[in-house]
Image (cartoon, rainbow, N blue to C red; front, side, top):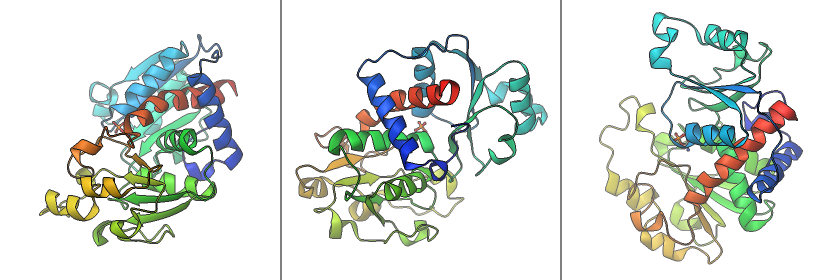
Length: 292
Ligand code: CP
């Protein structure tokens, strides 16, 4: 694997291999020696989980980090993303982890001769989030084939929905969406359903954050209580889930909007397990790309 930019570029075997490797790291298997490898983390959009768990993964692999700060860099003087990345390559970085607000920002960077790991591009893809979600599902069910998944919320603006739709479908799960009309996205072939029509038959309910920052005013008049009532995992909906069903959310969570406050850490929730798994998945991605 040269780069990781989209789940659509990963074969099923590569996905399965990364999940297995991450599970081995979680079980305590020794990690390869990446002591003399240098990684730069470039986050042009805010992040807590992805940024910190990449940093944690890099620490656990004993890698050397350059944490690039856009606000204190020559980006402020007009330097392009290409020239920023070319600079980091020139000074000796071995790979670049990048989050950027522009969809497909990575395309001009792919022939530069340095691996690009996409930590989220606009509303495009979030491959490491999808991989950690898949790992969490695999830990619960030991398979993907035949699982019923409802992904609920701001589908149109969600790179998590896009990455997971492609990967879960490729792995044999049945994915449906539930969303207000304004956030539907017909570029993916999933059916749209009412949450109440499927909540007692799904194996996985995956809530998405309402991405106000990408709505450009469209979400003015957004009513939190009304959204929660129609599209949220309310306490009542949580109670109707099958015994074995699990609840997922990429986070950050808007409590009592996408999910009832009391359900965030309830027994069926895997939200914090997803975050823990993110470190192992990112270790697996880094070792596969730098040592594969
Ligand atoms: N899930 C996720 O990408 O969270 P952050 O935006 O905090 O990285």
